[in-house]
Image (cartoon, rainbow, N blue to C red; front, side, top):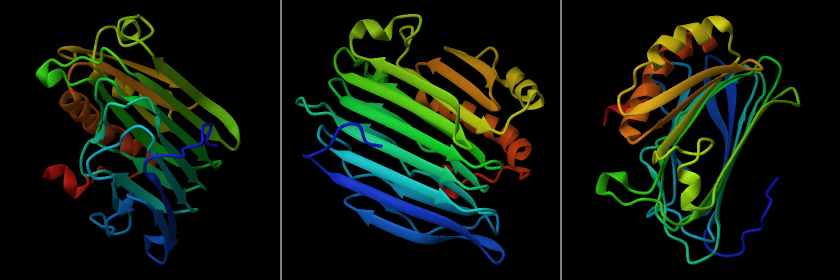
Length: 275
């Protein structure tokens, strides 16, 4: 549910429904309002539906409200990504909101977007809610960059709220929340520890065998740190560092290990990753 009503700025919503039809997953239902869209699906694996989500051109500003609602039906398998980074610009006071609602009904959803970039002065709430049925599979990540470290511009002012909730059969598996409300929050042990880039990868259902397979690849990360945990059947990989490119490389490498163990499929990267 949306906690704060948006009355100004872009009011955008994208609803997608994926259904297993004959020998492949198809995008059977699609509706959009405002500047959110989806490109024509691709089938590099033959049966898995690869689709690219298009965010508003020019980025997101205060007062914008974006909603993405994805439904994956039983036996369907969808892999979604974005063609570029999403930029959240400085706000004059209004909060921007992005809500992601995913429901996987004993199918498989992979949500593997490019990074989010938060300009100094941005005011944003980003909520992700994932509802999984009993045997549903989910692999997803979020990569956030606060400020513009490439040009030395730090996130010295602004406010960001990140919330992620994963449920299986109505029961919570993981509830994550992080509020960055001041420059001091960037340096706390429970915050970003002075690093501008944070990223989290989730995969479920996960086992101890998956944890042990991933852990060696998360050690000795140059100019960054990682942590790997297993919580209620959810593998959680966290990254802190100074490079979105490094976070992307790490997560894409881990995805090649994780995907066969979670979905039974070898890793077939989206074509757009090669551009």
